[in-house]
Amino acid sequence: MVVKEGRSREAEAPGSVREVRPGGTAASLLASYGVLLAIVVTFAAFSLLRPDSFFTVVTMKGILRDCAPLLIVSLGVTVVLVMNEYDLSVGGLISLCATLVVVFLSTQYQGVNYVLAIVLTLLIGAGIGAVNGVLVAYVRLPSFILTIAAGTVFTGLSLEIVDSQSVFQGIDPAYTKIANGTFLGFSNVVFIGLVVLLVVHVFLRHTEPGRYMYAIGGNPEAARLSGLRVRLLKSIGFAAVGLGAAIAGILLTSQAGASNPNAGVGFLLPAYAAAFLGSSMFRAALFTPLGTALGALYLQIIGTGLTILNLSGPLVQIIQGSILVAAILVSRAVRGREDG
Picture: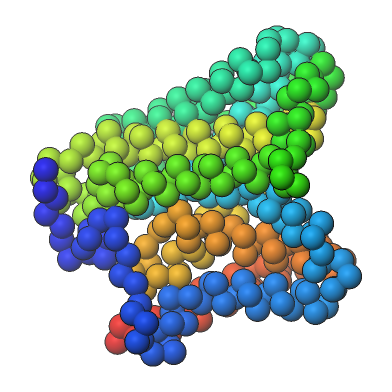
Protein backbone atom coordinates (compact mmCIF):
# COMPACT_ATOMS: atom_id res chain seq x y z
CA MET A 1 0.00 0.00 0.00
CA VAL A 2 1.30 3.41 -0.96
CA VAL A 3 0.20 6.39 1.05
CA LYS A 4 -0.39 9.57 -0.93
CA GLU A 5 0.94 12.22 1.31
CA GLY A 6 -0.12 15.81 1.15
CA ARG A 7 2.07 18.84 1.57
CA SER A 8 1.92 18.82 5.39
CA ARG A 9 5.23 18.53 7.14
CA GLU A 10 4.60 15.13 8.76
CA ALA A 11 2.88 13.54 5.80
CA GLU A 12 5.50 14.81 3.40
CA ALA A 13 7.62 11.77 4.14
CA PRO A 14 6.20 9.61 6.94
CA GLY A 15 8.90 8.33 9.21
CA SER A 16 11.53 10.72 7.95
CA VAL A 17 12.92 13.97 9.32
CA ARG A 18 14.11 16.88 7.26
CA GLU A 19 17.55 17.17 8.72
CA VAL A 20 19.73 20.21 8.26
CA ARG A 21 22.64 19.40 5.96
CA PRO A 22 26.20 19.85 7.22
CA GLY A 23 26.67 22.83 4.95
CA GLY A 24 23.86 24.77 6.61
CA THR A 25 24.24 28.15 8.23
CA ALA A 26 24.83 28.71 11.92
CA ALA A 27 21.18 29.70 12.25
CA SER A 28 20.12 26.41 10.66
CA LEU A 29 22.32 24.45 13.04
CA LEU A 30 20.88 26.33 16.00
CA ALA A 31 17.35 25.64 14.77
CA SER A 32 18.08 21.93 14.56
CA TYR A 33 20.25 21.50 17.64
CA GLY A 34 18.97 24.27 19.93
CA VAL A 35 17.71 21.82 22.54
CA LEU A 36 20.95 19.87 22.53
CA LEU A 37 22.89 23.11 22.94
CA ALA A 38 20.58 24.15 25.79
CA ILE A 39 21.26 20.85 27.54
CA VAL A 40 25.01 21.36 27.28
CA VAL A 41 24.85 25.00 28.45
CA THR A 42 22.51 24.19 31.36
CA PHE A 43 24.63 21.25 32.42
CA ALA A 44 27.79 23.35 32.29
CA ALA A 45 26.17 26.18 34.29
CA PHE A 46 25.08 23.90 37.13
CA SER A 47 28.46 22.16 37.09
CA LEU A 48 30.25 25.48 37.54
CA LEU A 49 27.85 26.68 40.24
CA ARG A 50 27.94 23.44 42.25
CA PRO A 51 30.91 21.35 41.07
CA ASP A 52 31.11 19.47 44.37
CA SER A 53 27.48 18.36 44.39
CA PHE A 54 26.14 18.54 40.82
CA PHE A 55 29.11 17.47 38.73
CA THR A 56 29.47 14.08 40.38
CA VAL A 57 28.93 10.49 39.30
CA VAL A 58 26.23 10.04 41.95
CA THR A 59 24.26 13.03 40.68
CA MET A 60 24.58 11.95 37.05
CA LYS A 61 23.26 8.50 37.89
CA GLY A 62 20.49 10.11 39.93
CA ILE A 63 19.45 12.28 36.99
CA LEU A 64 19.17 9.26 34.71
CA ARG A 65 17.26 7.30 37.35
CA ASP A 66 14.78 10.07 38.11
CA CYS A 67 14.32 10.87 34.42
CA ALA A 68 13.19 7.34 33.49
CA PRO A 69 9.51 7.53 34.64
CA LEU A 70 9.05 10.92 32.94
CA LEU A 71 10.71 9.56 29.80
CA ILE A 72 8.36 6.58 29.64
CA VAL A 73 5.26 8.75 30.12
CA SER A 74 6.50 11.27 27.55
CA LEU A 75 7.11 8.54 24.99
CA GLY A 76 3.53 7.34 25.35
CA VAL A 77 2.30 10.90 24.88
CA THR A 78 4.51 11.23 21.79
CA VAL A 79 2.70 8.35 20.08
CA VAL A 80 -0.62 10.23 20.14
CA LEU A 81 0.97 13.59 19.39
CA VAL A 82 2.32 12.32 16.06
CA MET A 83 -1.34 11.74 15.09
CA ASN A 84 -2.26 15.26 16.21
CA GLU A 85 -4.23 14.01 19.20
CA TYR A 86 -3.87 14.65 22.94
CA ASP A 87 -4.26 12.46 26.00
CA LEU A 88 -4.50 14.67 29.07
CA SER A 89 -5.64 11.81 31.29
CA VAL A 90 -2.11 10.45 31.66
CA GLY A 91 -1.49 11.98 35.09
CA GLY A 92 -4.67 10.51 36.56
CA LEU A 93 -3.99 7.17 34.89
CA ILE A 94 -0.53 6.99 36.45
CA SER A 95 -2.12 7.56 39.86
CA LEU A 96 -4.74 4.88 39.23
CA CYS A 97 -2.22 2.30 38.02
CA ALA A 98 0.15 3.08 40.90
CA THR A 99 -2.70 2.44 43.31
CA LEU A 100 -3.96 -0.70 41.60
CA VAL A 101 -0.63 -2.50 41.43
CA VAL A 102 -0.05 -2.09 45.17
CA VAL A 103 -3.65 -3.03 46.00
CA PHE A 104 -3.21 -6.19 43.94
CA LEU A 105 0.03 -7.29 45.61
CA SER A 106 -0.36 -5.97 49.15
CA THR A 107 -1.45 -8.58 51.68
CA GLN A 108 -3.68 -5.88 53.16
CA TYR A 109 -5.85 -6.21 50.04
CA GLN A 110 -5.56 -8.94 47.39
CA GLY A 111 -2.09 -10.29 48.14
CA VAL A 112 -1.46 -11.80 44.70
CA ASN A 113 2.00 -12.59 43.35
CA TYR A 114 3.80 -9.39 42.39
CA VAL A 115 4.40 -10.61 38.82
CA LEU A 116 0.68 -11.19 38.36
CA ALA A 117 -0.02 -7.78 39.92
CA ILE A 118 2.29 -6.15 37.38
CA VAL A 119 0.75 -7.98 34.44
CA LEU A 120 -2.78 -7.06 35.55
CA THR A 121 -1.81 -3.41 35.96
CA LEU A 122 -0.18 -3.28 32.52
CA LEU A 123 -3.28 -4.81 30.93
CA ILE A 124 -5.59 -2.43 32.76
CA GLY A 125 -3.51 0.59 31.82
CA ALA A 126 -3.37 -0.37 28.15
CA GLY A 127 -7.07 -1.29 28.19
CA ILE A 128 -8.15 2.03 29.68
CA GLY A 129 -6.00 3.85 27.14
CA ALA A 130 -7.58 1.83 24.35
CA VAL A 131 -11.05 2.77 25.60
CA ASN A 132 -10.05 6.43 25.40
CA GLY A 133 -8.84 5.79 21.87
CA VAL A 134 -12.07 4.09 20.84
CA LEU A 135 -14.11 7.00 22.17
CA VAL A 136 -11.93 9.44 20.24
CA ALA A 137 -11.56 7.48 17.02
CA TYR A 138 -14.90 5.68 16.68
CA VAL A 139 -17.33 7.80 18.71
CA ARG A 140 -15.51 10.97 17.54
CA LEU A 141 -15.32 12.63 20.93
CA PRO A 142 -12.73 15.44 21.08
CA SER A 143 -9.59 14.01 22.68
CA PHE A 144 -8.80 17.23 24.55
CA ILE A 145 -12.11 17.39 26.45
CA LEU A 146 -12.56 13.63 26.85
CA THR A 147 -9.16 12.99 28.36
CA ILE A 148 -9.33 15.93 30.74
CA ALA A 149 -12.56 14.48 32.12
CA ALA A 150 -11.14 10.95 32.15
CA GLY A 151 -8.05 12.07 34.05
CA THR A 152 -10.24 13.58 36.75
CA VAL A 153 -12.17 10.31 37.02
CA PHE A 154 -8.96 8.26 37.27
CA THR A 155 -7.57 10.48 40.02
CA GLY A 156 -10.83 10.21 41.93
CA LEU A 157 -10.84 6.43 41.58
CA SER A 158 -7.27 6.13 42.87
CA LEU A 159 -8.22 8.14 45.95
CA GLU A 160 -11.46 6.24 46.50
CA ILE A 161 -9.90 2.77 46.24
CA VAL A 162 -7.52 3.36 49.15
CA ASP A 163 -9.59 5.99 50.97
CA SER A 164 -6.98 8.66 50.13
CA GLN A 165 -4.33 6.76 52.10
CA SER A 166 -0.91 5.47 51.12
CA VAL A 167 -0.48 1.69 51.19
CA PHE A 168 2.93 0.45 52.31
CA GLN A 169 2.30 -2.73 54.29
CA GLY A 170 2.33 -6.27 52.95
CA ILE A 171 4.42 -5.48 49.86
CA ASP A 172 6.74 -8.21 48.58
CA PRO A 173 10.39 -7.07 48.94
CA ALA A 174 11.06 -8.54 45.50
CA TYR A 175 8.73 -5.91 44.04
CA THR A 176 10.75 -3.04 45.46
CA LYS A 177 13.94 -4.49 43.98
CA ILE A 178 12.59 -3.91 40.47
CA ALA A 179 13.26 -0.19 40.68
CA ASN A 180 15.75 -0.08 43.53
CA GLY A 181 18.08 -2.73 42.18
CA THR A 182 21.11 -1.90 40.06
CA PHE A 183 22.84 -3.29 37.01
CA LEU A 184 26.32 -2.27 35.87
CA GLY A 185 26.25 0.44 38.50
CA PHE A 186 23.05 2.06 37.23
CA SER A 187 19.51 1.81 38.56
CA ASN A 188 17.31 -0.79 36.87
CA VAL A 189 14.84 1.93 35.92
CA VAL A 190 17.46 3.47 33.62
CA PHE A 191 17.59 0.30 31.55
CA ILE A 192 13.82 -0.07 31.60
CA GLY A 193 13.54 3.47 30.26
CA LEU A 194 16.09 2.73 27.54
CA VAL A 195 14.22 -0.40 26.48
CA VAL A 196 10.95 1.55 26.21
CA LEU A 197 12.75 4.26 24.23
CA LEU A 198 14.17 1.68 21.82
CA VAL A 199 10.79 -0.01 21.33
CA VAL A 200 8.94 3.24 20.66
CA HIS A 201 11.71 4.51 18.37
CA VAL A 202 11.68 1.33 16.28
CA PHE A 203 7.88 1.29 16.16
CA LEU A 204 7.40 4.91 15.09
CA ARG A 205 10.41 5.29 12.83
CA HIS A 206 10.95 1.85 11.32
CA THR A 207 7.57 0.12 11.00
CA GLU A 208 4.64 0.70 8.65
CA PRO A 209 2.10 1.40 11.44
CA GLY A 210 4.46 4.02 12.87
CA ARG A 211 4.89 5.73 9.52
CA TYR A 212 1.15 5.63 8.97
CA MET A 213 0.67 7.40 12.31
CA TYR A 214 2.83 10.26 11.02
CA ALA A 215 0.71 10.33 7.87
CA ILE A 216 -2.45 10.54 10.00
CA GLY A 217 -1.01 13.46 11.91
CA GLY A 218 -0.23 15.25 8.66
CA ASN A 219 -3.62 14.75 7.02
CA PRO A 220 -6.06 12.26 8.58
CA GLU A 221 -8.60 12.54 5.77
CA ALA A 222 -5.99 11.86 3.10
CA ALA A 223 -4.72 8.95 5.17
CA ARG A 224 -8.24 7.52 5.42
CA LEU A 225 -8.86 7.89 1.69
CA SER A 226 -5.54 6.12 1.07
CA GLY A 227 -6.89 3.08 2.88
CA LEU A 228 -5.18 3.48 6.23
CA ARG A 229 -7.03 2.17 9.27
CA VAL A 230 -7.03 5.54 10.96
CA ARG A 231 -9.41 4.69 13.78
CA LEU A 232 -7.59 1.49 14.70
CA LEU A 233 -4.20 3.22 14.70
CA LYS A 234 -5.53 6.01 16.92
CA SER A 235 -6.88 3.44 19.36
CA ILE A 236 -3.48 1.75 19.44
CA GLY A 237 -1.83 5.11 20.09
CA PHE A 238 -4.01 5.82 23.12
CA ALA A 239 -3.40 2.27 24.36
CA ALA A 240 0.33 3.06 24.23
CA VAL A 241 -0.28 6.08 26.49
CA GLY A 242 -2.09 3.84 28.97
CA LEU A 243 0.68 1.26 28.87
CA GLY A 244 3.32 3.94 29.48
CA ALA A 245 1.30 5.30 32.40
CA ALA A 246 1.06 1.81 33.90
CA ILE A 247 4.82 1.23 33.59
CA ALA A 248 5.53 4.59 35.22
CA GLY A 249 3.09 3.86 38.05
CA ILE A 250 4.74 0.50 38.68
CA LEU A 251 8.23 2.03 38.77
CA LEU A 252 7.17 4.84 41.10
CA THR A 253 5.59 2.47 43.61
CA SER A 254 8.48 0.04 43.35
CA GLN A 255 10.91 2.86 44.16
CA ALA A 256 8.86 4.10 47.10
CA GLY A 257 7.77 0.70 48.36
CA ALA A 258 4.27 2.16 48.74
CA SER A 259 1.35 3.47 46.74
CA ASN A 260 0.51 7.15 46.47
CA PRO A 261 -2.95 7.94 45.06
CA ASN A 262 -1.56 11.25 43.77
CA ALA A 263 1.57 9.76 42.20
CA GLY A 264 0.82 11.04 38.71
CA VAL A 265 -0.26 14.59 39.52
CA GLY A 266 3.07 16.15 38.56
CA PHE A 267 3.61 14.30 35.28
CA LEU A 268 1.10 15.78 32.85
CA LEU A 269 2.76 19.10 32.01
CA PRO A 270 6.37 17.82 32.09
CA ALA A 271 5.44 14.96 29.74
CA TYR A 272 4.04 17.33 27.14
CA ALA A 273 6.84 19.82 27.74
CA ALA A 274 9.40 17.09 27.00
CA ALA A 275 7.63 16.08 23.79
CA PHE A 276 7.21 19.64 22.50
CA LEU A 277 10.71 20.62 23.55
CA GLY A 278 12.08 17.60 21.70
CA SER A 279 10.07 18.46 18.60
CA SER A 280 11.70 21.89 18.46
CA MET A 281 14.98 20.17 17.60
CA PHE A 282 13.82 19.64 14.05
CA ARG A 283 12.91 22.23 11.44
CA ALA A 284 9.82 20.19 10.59
CA ALA A 285 8.69 20.37 14.24
CA LEU A 286 8.35 16.61 14.15
CA PHE A 287 7.60 14.62 17.29
CA THR A 288 10.19 11.87 17.62
CA PRO A 289 11.10 9.45 20.43
CA LEU A 290 14.73 10.56 20.49
CA GLY A 291 13.74 14.23 20.60
CA THR A 292 11.33 13.50 23.45
CA ALA A 293 14.09 11.66 25.31
CA LEU A 294 16.35 14.70 25.07
CA GLY A 295 13.51 16.94 26.21
CA ALA A 296 12.87 14.75 29.26
CA LEU A 297 16.58 14.68 30.08
CA TYR A 298 16.79 18.47 29.81
CA LEU A 299 13.87 18.95 32.20
CA GLN A 300 15.39 16.52 34.70
CA ILE A 301 18.76 18.29 34.57
CA ILE A 302 17.03 21.60 35.28
CA GLY A 303 15.00 20.15 38.14
CA THR A 304 17.98 18.45 39.75
CA GLY A 305 20.22 21.48 39.35
CA LEU A 306 17.72 23.88 40.84
CA THR A 307 17.13 21.53 43.76
CA ILE A 308 20.87 21.36 44.46
CA LEU A 309 20.95 25.17 44.44
CA ASN A 310 18.40 25.02 47.30
CA LEU A 311 15.95 27.33 45.60
CA SER A 312 12.41 27.59 46.94
CA GLY A 313 9.64 25.59 45.31
CA PRO A 314 7.81 28.50 43.62
CA LEU A 315 11.07 29.96 42.33
CA VAL A 316 12.06 26.58 40.90
CA GLN A 317 8.77 26.44 38.98
CA ILE A 318 9.24 29.97 37.66
CA ILE A 319 12.78 29.24 36.47
CA GLN A 320 11.85 25.88 34.95
CA GLY A 321 8.99 27.41 33.01
CA SER A 322 11.04 30.41 31.88
CA ILE A 323 13.92 28.27 30.64
CA LEU A 324 11.52 26.01 28.77
CA VAL A 325 9.69 28.90 27.09
CA ALA A 326 12.97 30.65 26.21
CA ALA A 327 14.45 27.51 24.66
CA ILE A 328 11.41 26.92 22.47
CA LEU A 329 11.12 30.59 21.46
CA VAL A 330 14.77 30.81 20.43
CA SER A 331 14.62 27.60 18.43
CA ARG A 332 11.40 28.51 16.66
CA ALA A 333 12.38 32.10 16.02
CA VAL A 334 15.57 31.01 14.30
CA ARG A 335 13.73 28.30 12.38
CA GLY A 336 11.10 30.78 11.25
CA ARG A 337 13.82 33.10 9.97
CA GLU A 338 15.40 30.23 8.06
CA ASP A 339 12.08 29.12 6.56
CA GLY A 340 11.31 32.71 5.60
